[in-house]
Amino acid sequence: MAFDGSSIKALLDGAVAKGAVHGIAALVVDRQGPLFHHAAGEASERTVFRNASMTKAVATTAALQLMEQGRLDLDATVESILPEFGRLQVLDGFDGDTPRLRPPASAATVRQLMTHSGGLGYFFLSEKLKRYHEVTGEPHALTGLKRSLSAPLVNDPGTAWEYGVNTDWLGLIVEKISGQSLGSYLRQHVYGPLGMTESTFEPGADERARLLRVMQRQPDGSLVPSKLDLPPSSEWDAAGHGSYGTIQDYGRFVRAWLDDGGGILSPATVQLALQNHLGPIKLPDFLKSAMPELSNDVPAMPVPQGWGLGFHLTLVDLPGMRSAGTGDWAGVFNSYYWIDRTRGIGGVLMTQVLPFFDMPVVETLLGFEMAVYQQVGAATPAL
Image 1 (cartoon, helix red, strand yellow):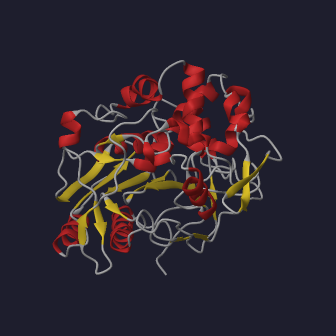
Image 2 (cartoon, one colour; image 1 turned 90 degrees about the vertical axis):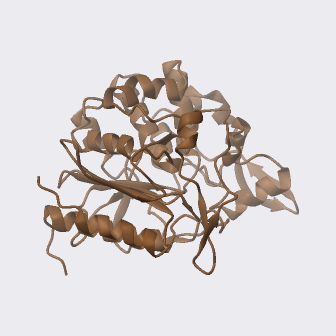
């Protein structure tokens, strides 16, 4: 399709010119390949980004491949594959400064890891977990220390949607079944086949030289270099947040999902993954931040939503924007993507700004998505 990206280019250039971002890149893909790419400010064609939680969908794809091969049962308990998971307790609260722990009421399953209903949390979104790390001195997930994954559950498995280290454990399952590190498995079965030659868990000097720096939004709206970053090295290939890559590489991944799996998954698996697997569990109306320098509070859109196998789902058509059944997610450094299989279109917007859900970036993201659908013809008439 002919795609005129001039309005998107103007949007990104304008965001840099007014100081909303220091560097930003956008990519639009359809089933055949890229339709549009533009980088502005400090970002260029070859910029490497911290994918952060955009790693989750890629790691989940690896687990789905093992499911297709009959090597992984989605309804198997996690502890049947990784016995150490069975030692995790539920954090009920505190007696003074002593954590109050109890055994979980049920055993978490692989599917629950994929849908963030396995009971695990994140220290920056759970006050309870944040306090646990403070009083025990145990490391949290962004320290690069593998011991951080032994933090307790915050809910009984299967009772609530809670964003957390679920996908990190899923990555350990991929490693256990495949006998490879997650990075090595992905190079062979995801990165390699899709031509994602610049995606890695271990950026070398060249990739680090091309990394866009992380900036921190100040109360007055200005940006200063951030003191927060991913650890320079990690004891494990963190499936929840640890990969790096170019926006073009992430576009290749989005394209594969648009294109019935792009040869790395079967069409049936793609369809299965982009259905709501939460059952009666509802997504929260509001994600409250426990660490404002890392994430703002995140309100949910007031439309029906769900969670598939590795993806957030929008369950209705959004006027002038994405279609029902679109999968999406984001990374903490304000990078975002969506995969609209109904329209055969996907978008990726990447910057490196903290805290997450930064309003100037979110406004740019909404403008970007609307500009894309103006080009491809809106799914439903704009209201």
